[in-house]
Figure 1 (cartoon, rainbow, N blue to C red):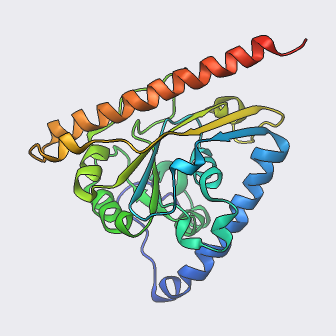
Figure 2 (cartoon, one colour):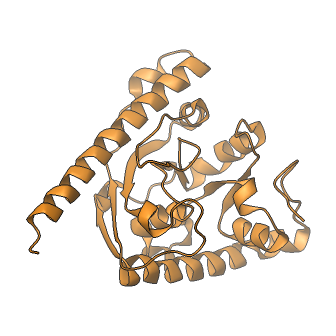
Length: 250
């Protein structure tokens, strides 16, 4: 039965008791499988990983190209260190209509450290949950709220800005390119022998926004600043890829 309308699935005492173990096993097994997909079956290049660090209250904000982006962003930043430091595994707010469609998928999503986000995205319950867990760990988030259809970086939603203001998180702008070719919208099986790039930028300075009233307007202005950094990073990455392609031997 579909679970993507209404409230998040309830989890019993046994699930909560076993969750630290099952989450560690399921997530690390999954990211190992995706490591093979990204780094063996496809060519993935990572730059700027040192900008991420290992401190809690770190928010990885990325452009969004495919349903596998959260695995890529977290894996490229922390794998294989996450095998010995499971607290580095990022939390991932996830659309209920994509990740909670069936009981099995919902169970996997919970163990992937997903946070249930209801359709429509203005979900105060999910925002409160993010505010609770982010100061104790790392989170991957896609401020656009939806995958790109043309490769461009779209506008961000104010909810992410509210999260930043509430937690004063360390914000890392992340740019990915090539995932639209690996798993475009409408396709369920990833392609192989593609080229993927991930760039982690330096932490964003947003101190000026902390002095303003904590309103939706301030949050929107803040996330607009973040998206401008992601967009500039994305344009630079695409220029680099085009230059390398043009200079490659034929």
